[in-house]
Length: 278
Image 1 (cartoon, rainbow, N blue to C red):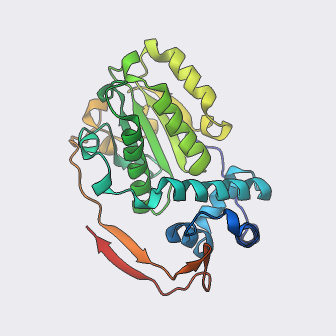
Image 2 (cartoon, rainbow, N blue to C red):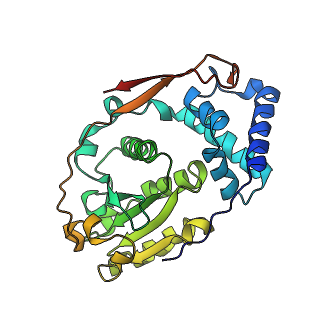
Image 3 (cartoon, helix red, strand yellow):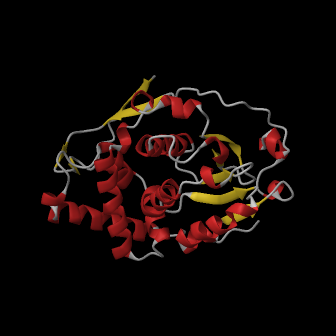
């Protein structure tokens, strides 16, 4: 299936956005969170082009809007402690219940992130803890896929009204919309029951235009257009007989130079120290 083309910001446009961010750091130093933005996020801004490219693509190369979203994302990541989310501070029982997990690749080679809707009953779990588990998986997928696109599959097999939580669904949508620009390859709605058609239409209206272009309502008749048999679970008619079992992440952490008011000394030194965290 043909997807809409992403824009292709030039190196000069990426550097312009980086410079605007640098200037805002200096001009609005008093507005930078206490302790500065997280070193990991500063590295994304100053040592690579991929992240900035996504903000420019998402905002149709509009510098003002791209800078605004980038700044708000940096604030959100700092305030929410995104870089500190890990296995020892999330509800591992939610993870082990396999409510959501990554498995396999779509036809474009992108990681597939599966939500098993029937396993979640509205009101039976702590919503804040559930959101944190979602963020854990998204951040881990991005790390392991080197910030590549992700395909989300909402598996609605045997799901009913009690399995749909609009607050949680809105949170997922808004998180991608506001803080993970241009990160989705497809949004696949699998085996939508007729009783949830109205809910699906409400959710569709919440999505930004760029996400609607990537939304597909699928069944076992056309799922192979998006996921091949080898990557498809047996419950969808594929060959993959995988049963979820959590595997701890072998995570790289990096030690960066100290920063002053969130502005890297030497922006940024290439002298990095890596270690494996278990």
